[in-house]
Amino acid sequence: MLLLMKVLVIGNGGREHAIIWKLAQDRCTPELFCAPGNAGTATLATNLPIAAEDIPALVTWAKINRPDLTVVGPEAPLCAGLTDALEAEGLRVFGPCRAAAALEGSKAFSKEVMDAAGVPTARFHTYTDSAKAIAGLEEFGLPVVIKADGLAAGKGVIIAKTRKEAESALHDILDKRRFGQAGTEVVVESFLEGEEASVFALCDGEHVVLLPAAQDHKRIFDNDEGPNTGGMGAYTPAPVATHEVMLFTKEKIVLPVLQELKRRGIVYRGVLFCGLMIRGKDVQVLEFNCRFGDPETEVVLPSIASDLVPIFSACVDGTLHDELVQLRTESATTIVMAAPGYPGSYPKGLEISGVTEAEAAGCHVFHAGTALRDGRVVTAGGRVLTVTAFGKDLREAVTKAYEGVNQIHFEGAHYRHDIAAKAFKYL
Image (cartoon, rainbow, N blue to C red; front, side, top):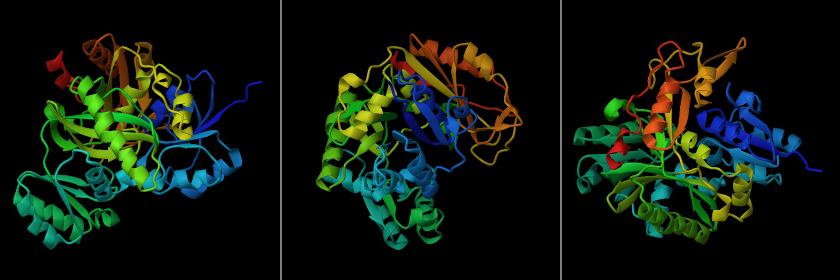
């Protein structure tokens, strides 16, 4: 007799809905729970009223309910040691331990590991004193990149185009504590030019399997204009990440980092997000994240043809191998629909319609910032929905995704109209 598998997913965004959606298709038909979840995950899983950062409450629930696997979506609980706390109770977790998650939790640690492992990245220095940091600017040209060391909700990176902007950023972070404890140290590094790509590396501590490269769109407006966001859309595969780039990423970036961590007594199990800057054959690491990216997850995970539980379990158990991960051959695109005012302040509670129609047209609609109110789905965040579509090629995937977007309505909804346009020059 087959025992029903319990899987707990931590988080409440589009990434977590995509993970839940993919897990729900596994042949083992797992019983799914999501903490805290959103209106989309509620259709496939049991939402739990526990915040993703509430480690004591999550551990208490897990001790009582004994999930067979826990998948941690966001970086904050990973960096705070959720994996360690659950593993101490004998539970299996897909997501790195606290020491490994420091690759995202501390930019200074990440750069130091890259340097020790011989991984190509921007030239850098770290500082805790603003006067010394300002004096050190002489070693860097303009523009220069200034990063708060810790987690700053995606807002801790400043690209300063002038000396005045650089000095102001250093004072804001180190003296005025703009990002709180995340800004007790800064990384100052040279500016890299090229085209960005995101590569998810599945890791079991020793072995690595790369998922198809995606390209995110960070700026709020078309043509990469306006302020940065959490991501306004993505597509996969990204043609800038050629076969040679992917091979280099595995052999010269991910594996050396895993080996360097192991040398320090740290085993990295989970997914390692590699943010790359690519210029021809030159590949350099912009950043590492210790979890799946969003909205890249909404195109990359649906591109996996294999069941997800065996893949995640192999990462946990140290048995990962290439044959476990089979991929679809189509292209995929996702478009983020945002609330009015995002990435600034925005209203909540706006009623959403047309999701059923978009899904009937062949799209997958993942909820990012939604909630249920009196039986209706309403907005509850800045990035509200991600609309994903597949096509025999990228142009078809883009066309279908925008057709899905046009079916969905809520007051003030806005989105970019040029998702994947950069890729067309390669096609």
